[in-house]
Picture 1: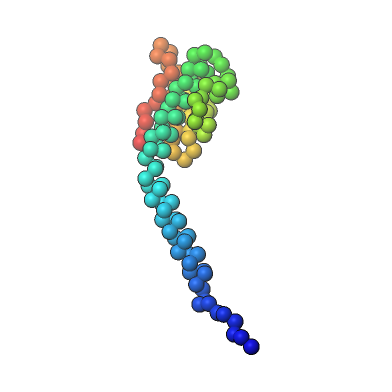
Picture 2: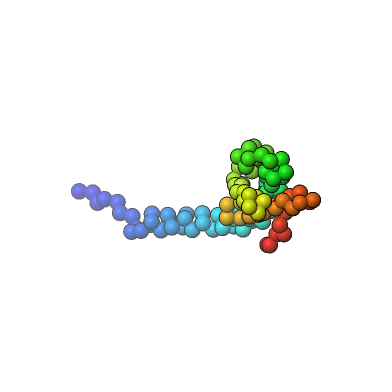
Amino acid sequence: MAKARTSRPGSRRSRGWWIMAITLAALAVAGWYYYPPAKAYAHTATAYSARVACSCRFVAGRSLEDCEKDKLEGMEFVTLVDDPSTRTVTARFPLIAVDHATYREGFGCVLEKWED
């Protein structure tokens, strides 16, 4: 009777751990490399969206749902929330950026200072 071929115990499991470790390291390096441009894009997108939506909402008098149509292509992740009592629109890009624009009489909509 022929002996069954035996492999070293844990060799496949060990190889799987190495592949997972290399993949996680590659993702960490990619995240480190791409985070600054992504953060800059997110701040630009939220600042633009807050300012335009504030003007749309409190200068033009349109609803916030109607103002959502004015967002540019590529800004689908930016969410808008308005506060009629303070005449402020807040734009958020998940986990990265938040910006506020407030309507001021005589000035229009003004962005709040960035706190980075």
